[in-house]
Length: 120
Length: 283
Image 1 (cartoon, each protein chain N blue to C red):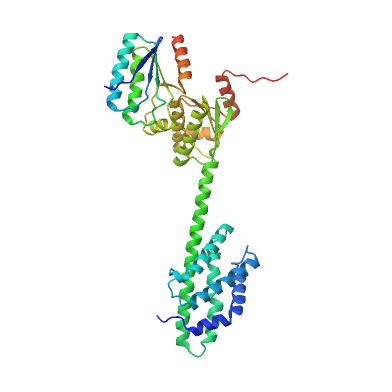
Image 2: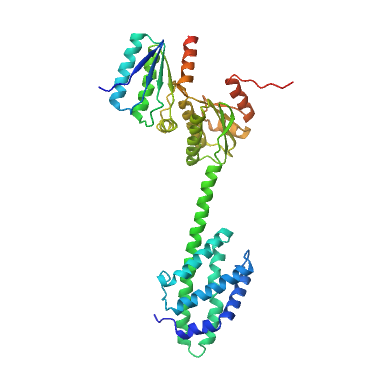
């Protein structure tokens, strides 16, 4: 079955969504991510969606859920690389993702994540 | 309906010069020739007369849309287009043709003095033809005007949304004019695209040039701010004038989570601070 890879980098987990997201894939990712956070006791999760150029309400909510579940498991989450079209769509759908940290690219996202973890 | 008599045509042909002079005088008297060069007007009137005579000679009927009238239609289209560009109104443009009626009717009256029945018939024919030509002129005039308006609207839309780079990593968008849904969309798209292209972390939206802020405008602003945040950049709104601040408070609008500054300088200062930069005087 198709899966989205979750890479470990020190204390952090890296999720890069490179394919077209469909509903089943999103649900699998949720399961995988929560299990990996539990297993590795990661301190932070970086989700890169720069390759995603289309989004619907389900995927939009899924992004919010991913960040929420990581937070509950005590891992800081940063969402990076959202495309303009995706951002506009989410706003028009009313999914403003409150409480989700964002960054422009992986580099600044990583910096933000490290700062957050150090503050704790 | 009887066709135009050959004798009518002959009368028009023989008295062409007189017709032309009277027509031009009429145009000048009615003010339809204002803003036009005398030379141009003379050329246009004589060309139109020639075209209409040659068109009638070829036995073209009343149907102005027929292929026989192609030449004159083209001429009128060009004429009304140039009038539209000159900024003349529809009245002045239509007068160009309708002013021909007076001299022409006088001529026919003179020509058919002894045959009232034929006169009435011929007048009707000529009148129908000129009306149809006049309508065609108006129609093309309207189209040209609409094209001009449309082009101006598009230009305005593009002109009013420049995204400027203030510093490395700081973009500014000075908004001018009323914010409606369509403009917000254009503004949002161009700003977000520039954020991606330049990798800027801070965007300043300056609303000094926005005349009024109501609930709808505030909603559009909030949407833009949220989209910018989702992309991972920060947004500062600057140029909140005292009246606008009062309106926002009176309307009970919730701008929580949005950083607002009174002017662009303050916003730039904040942006530089966030980037860890300081500006100091050179000794």
